[in-house]
Length: 356
Image (tube, rainbow, N blue to C red; front, top):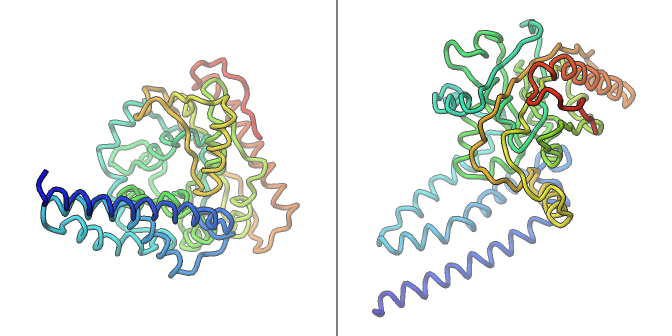
């Protein structure tokens, strides 16, 4: 072993030590994040912009910085380090909190046609959605990833079901805050019209006159993914109902049949894994299912868009009014499921929808 290679080994070892210490720092920071609900909108209020950017820069620098530096030391030029430094600018611009990006390239990518064909994806409209109002479309179930609903509603290619059935629906989708910490993935989301799921971000979208597509059950519902029966986590989800009342928009239940058949999950009965997944979800706001397949397996996913429920506008809705419209929404979702479960479920003998 030459002196030069020994020097590289020592330097790389120091870099890995720094990275391990950095990960330890992030673990301590994660406890603060969990307590402050920073990954879920800081208890419904935005974090100070400087602290939000600090979290992102610290996350990316600690996880990728040492690796980029080590690889650059091998090629003798700081190429990756410079790229990482330049990427930090758009990475920490917080645009997902201000309506996202205007150019939605990903909605027109033919690449996603592969997944649509793999899922045998179909979009079904039960009634027209008038153009004179905004909507909050609630997709159920979350499953591991809500591929069906997002791919069906996010298809803006000419001749697609979405363009044919809902040609004038302009909307943005919501995703957990932590999704925008993941490099490259955040850019794919933003190009697909996805923004931060924090309430202040969602309100900004509706105030612009856009509609919203969201998954009310969120990461918690993803922990109840079972292939033999459908479960939605909804009875405590009052936030999107309150948002609809504050803005006077209509609620639209949407069910993605056979969404839970797209992944094979393991450890559903393990208490230790269940504890870990719930802990991860509380910190980062996303679920961590244990799956055996990377790509969704071949399925027959049918996304059915239900009837809108018009909400009165009330900036300070009472808890009773919020609960009333939550019950109306649950009733509408159950009716949508009952009307279509024998037609689209595989197998058609799946039991009635469970709402928890």
